[in-house]
Structures are given as structure tokens and as C-alpha cells.
Image (cartoon, rainbow, N blue to C red; front, side, top):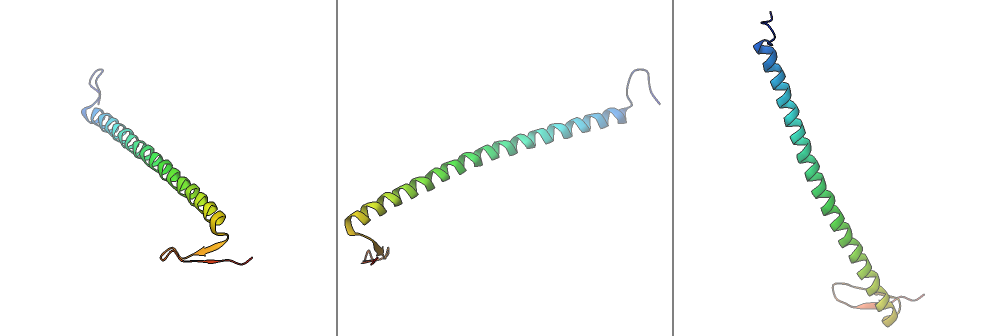
Length: 85
């Protein structure tokens, strides 16, 4: 039963509950997107670190090959042996 131009209390309550659900979902999506952006930024930072490490390793390898020739190195002791080609 309607009362003039006014919704029933239960109908209005349902509309407000649905609005609250929309607000909650939107807020949660915003939090997820913010966290995703932070993770993407951190991932890019780590990928840069990995690339820099590879470049430094490659430069060191070239320097050592130039100085000692082809060698195999024990990284724990620093002892190396020549690799015969």
C-alpha cells in the first residue's frame, strides 16, 4: 500500500541498503586499484634492480675475461681455473 508520493519504509530501506553496497564496492575497488598501483610500482623497481644487476654482472664478466681469459670461478673462494677451448 502506498501513501501518497512517498515510498514505503521497507522500500526506502532497501534503496538505501543498495546504495550502501554500491559505496562499499566502489571504495573496495579503489583500495584494490591503489594497492595494484603500488605493486606495479614496486615490480618496476625490482625489474630495474634485476636489469642493473645483470648489466653489472655482464660488465664484470667482460672485464674478467679480458684480464684472465675464459675461466671458471669458485665464488666462495675466488679460485679460478682456465677453461680450455
